[in-house]
Length: 224
Image (cartoon, rainbow, N blue to C red; front, side):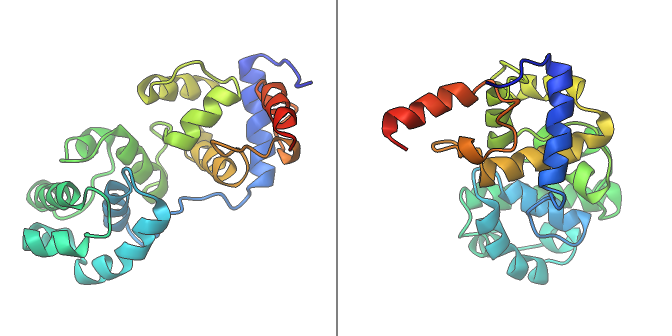
């Protein structure tokens, strides 16, 4: 039976365990500079990192600067992004965002939340990814589907809205770990605590997880 720790103590224990289990946890989007990460993150909305990483090498080779995106022919940019879901809207936003980077920021990606979220197609989640991974600035916690799912399963919050999940996690996790915490949960969500068939028997967090008994009963009913 999982240990019934209060949320702050449980969050601390979860961080300690995940840090040991996933010492190499990192952003799984491929990038070499802030602009590449910004573009990759914008492309990753409703699309897997794996698919984004298949498309971006050729895109990054063709468009090396914000100016190159800003001055690109939109139909050609759309064609370059065609393998990505919602590619037309994303091409339009990337082109518009880069035009603002050129006009207001000297072609550089700004390292502040306020400036990033003012760009077309850039919300708080994308800004958190860029700030945490390109600039090592912990402004918030990235809440994707894995982070949202695991946060609820682990009893760290009852909220279902990412906008409410993020501040709840920020209260429980030290600020210096905000970026890593997202990576830890994403790694664990992709490798163990999957949406439809979580591997509860082999989970490193089973002694801390209030959902463990429920999922084990479901596995028993299925004969697995």
